[in-house]
Length: 181
Image (tube, rainbow, N blue to C red):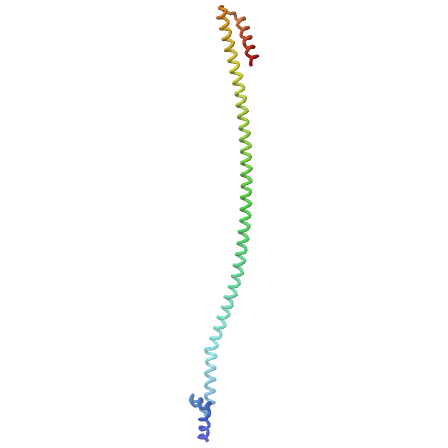
């Protein structure tokens, strides 16, 4: 019977493989038990730790990806706030520049107006001074001309004029000079 089994086993490819790997029907139960024991030892000793390590790594990776997504959102918000701040600062700077220009323009106009007023005052004072100086000079010239006329008249008349005559001639010469101007 064992020989028949071997003959049948020899013609079957599965039995040939089983015979090749040392599987014997009478020891099959002990081999299954040995396999299950080795499988249990591997599962509880190695696979369980490997699976928990893989789960931990998977959780860390997911946490890292979630953190990266949060950071991307925060970065986008930060860039948006930065752009808004830059825009506001640019607007404020433009307003400040406009205000500075307006202030400078007003200051320039005020200074120009004040300079014009000062120039007018200076011209007015100069004209007054010139007028006063002219009057003073005319008075001096009239007096000098009158003195010269009296002196010339006294020499022409060849005599000394009295104070009263001198005064009359001076007045007459002064009137003539005034009426000619």
